[in-house]
Image 1 (cartoon, rainbow over the protein chains, first blue to last red):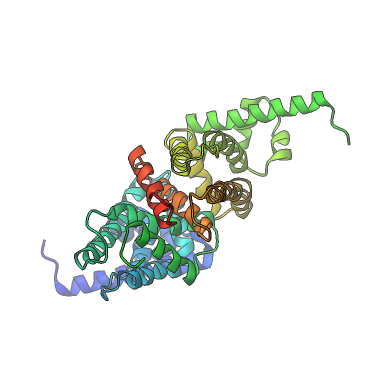
Image 2 (cartoon, rainbow over the protein chains, first blue to last red; image 1 turned 45 degrees about the vertical axis):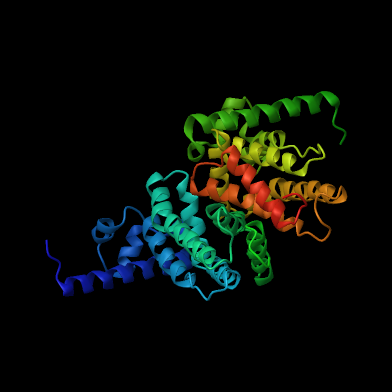
Amino acid sequence: MITSPSSLRRSERSRRAILRASLDLCTERGYGRVTVEAIAARAGVSKKTIYRWWPSKGAVLLEAFADVLVDATPFVDTGDIGADLRAHVAGAVRVLSVPPFGPAYAGILSELHHDDTLARAVREQLVDPRVEEAVGRLRGAQDQGQIPPGANLPLAVEMLYGPVYYRHVLGKPVQDEETVAALVDHVLRALRAPGY
Amino acid sequence: MITSPSSLRRSERSRRAILRASLDLCTERGYGRVTVEAIAARAGVSKKTIYRWWPSKGAVLLEAFADVLVDATPFVDTGDIGADLRAHVAGAVRVLSVPPFGPAYAGILSELHHDDTLARAVREQLVDPRVEEAVGRLRGAQDQGQIPPGANLPLAVEMLYGPVYYRHVLGKPVQDEETVAALVDHVLRALRAPGY
């Protein structure tokens, strides 16, 4: 089937309306009371349209959350791995610290333990690509001599993201700027990065 | 009111029966389908007895999980902080890797975002005391010259526990022994512990 440009445009418009509606409803009602029915009504589409693209409300909210998170946490390369990691982690912390994004992701994570499809989607659509990009950014720093060869980069990424998840799932206050900076310093020192 | 030794014994017997019943039901049905009613029936007590001691099924399972976790992750001091942290973290990973404990804790965490009482109980009854003990063990190592003065010990604890939570809530495979050892090495190196 060939999809025409105008139907693609319409699809993209519907997609955006659906994601926006899911986040708005999350703000108004809390994650637990958002339904696919309400998202459809708010976005002006049919439930069938939603179910054609997503298997559950969790999957809709995951895509909405991921769009915002990815925008807020680009992997820039200014040539200073410390500064770039601080900006990256601080961006993630900022997104998680405000409604509806923080509560939406908490709601999504809360469904993983009984929804294997959503659990796979979180890992495959959000976490694994982000981890791969983070490892890529660290590898770039390695190429520039800022991190020694042979450093355990995947472990470093878990040491950066782990404490952020830890506070988020436990409902502890998110890291402030100083704590993010200390975390990045400690992780770079753990990798024996020169100057840390 | 003076509580007699025999009524304390009876209470402790009921408490143990209730905790055991909650874990057994979690194994059989999964966290989501455990109810206070079923726990009461299985333990041979009234629902009223359970609600006298705990506000929700999540609180019962939290106490059951915490008992097991605390037993599995003592803070020993063999004089070797690396070995002691490896044993401690490996103990936590082992508990989380098997039913019903891993799924029970995932279920408990999944309720935090909409149950503030349970969220507070997890922090105050489980996480904060564990963090305090972990900081205490690190401080002991500091006194023995294994960690430099001025090291950021609370951050170190988050760097140890964070990656464990990260994998647990995302349903990723838990850390193997080698990864736990690498994590502990990296955290001690981040603290500038001599020899790491």
